[in-house]
Amino acid sequence: MNQPGESLRDRKKRRTRAALERATLRLSAERGYDHVTVEEIAAEADVSVRTFFNYFASKDEALIGADPEAGPRMAERILAAGDEVTPFEAYRRSVLAEITDELNSARDLWLLRKDVLMQRPDLLVRAFASSAESEQLLADAVARRAGLPESHLYPRLLVAAGSAAFRCAVTRWALDDDVALGSLVGEALELFAAGLAHVPPHHHEGGTS
Amino acid sequence: MNQPGESLRDRKKRRTRAALERATLRLSAERGYDHVTVEEIAAEADVSVRTFFNYFASKDEALIGADPEAGPRMAERILAAGDEVTPFEAYRRSVLAEITDELNSARDLWLLRKDVLMQRPDLLVRAFASSAESEQLLADAVARRAGLPESHLYPRLLVAAGSAAFRCAVTRWALDDDVALGSLVGEALELFAAGLAHVPPHHHEGGTS
DNA sequence: GGATTTTTTTGCAGTCACTGCAAGTTTGCA
DNA sequence: TGCAAACTTGCAGTGACTGCAAAAAAATCC
Image (cartoon, rainbow over all chains, first blue to last red; front, side, top):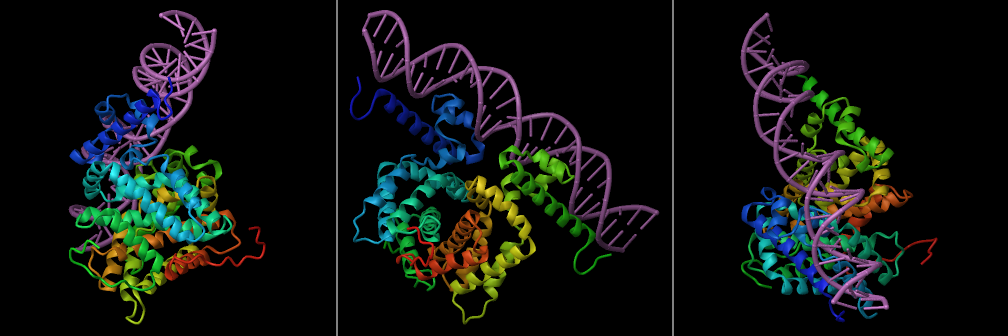
């Protein structure tokens, strides 16, 4: 009894993971991240505390809810991009694709996340810290794609810039959501592409660019 | 009894802080960051555990040993820069100045730090997370300097890029220290200045590409 | 269907980071 | 010298996180 797509086991795991993520966000948005214990989260999701830690290495990780497959998926996309695009472009597309998918499939979670981050902007930085291994994976992919040695700064820097772009975009987005998160990430990457040396013009007011 | 420079109290505080920082690094380099307890660090520095936490908000923070005055100092420098330089240039100079000073006054600590980070590269990201408030301060300074509204992405992005540059430079530096850390940070900032859109050439002699 | 093997969940005991509070101690200042 | 402010300390407590071994559930085999 093993469907090609998903076994009962896999389905249950997905559901548990999702429940824990949602519980973390719901409770944190409601009464503040550090007024919520893992015990309460686990209770809300109807599993034991120990199970929480089988799914997430830390409370922070549950907050950002990083998909463990996202890293490999993005690396895949970077390497699969045709030779006609630059490494930067390949990376940019993989980031934007990932974010678009994520937002489409879990918009409600991001709204909760926004509430939490508005209360404590520093949590975003902390939560991102857990994605360190993932960064290494992506940097290697970029290096391969760009034909650079592993020791070169560029791949690491590009990936770190992507992280930073996302982080800043979310921070900005949490302030007021006139603009779509996806657009903000795109805008940030655009600034990195063009170079930070020149100050961008500031075409503001509700421009949903 | 109050010298213009430093009171007895100030001197003692500096010494205690330095002792704690050094103890954290020495023990961590020797037997690994998470095989060292705060209790041991405090003992090595001859203070109580409680005092450790009066100086550092977390064990991570002691590892990076961020100078609490560094943020304000850099912000100061950014705002003080003459009008003939761009905001980017003002920021770059403040970063490089800070790093040069830091390396000159605490090179030995950075060598210990290198040992620790070689064992666990992810610690760097985590340690940087504690500098979130400082980032806000710098971003505000950049925004003022560039005449941009606080909501604009650019200032935040520039500061985040600076963090990333430093982070990547240290990571690279920890691999092999043929190159000075200062130069690597400079190089990284250069890449950001020029824009990540084009792949940098890799001027390498032993090119095992 | 039932036996067995593999995976997942759980409870439990323990470690350790970190916090608030209420002394105790040291330094600054008049 | 004596008082006030700043710093240190111990203590008790909370809560994140871990390893381990047993229970429960699901996939596999006959």
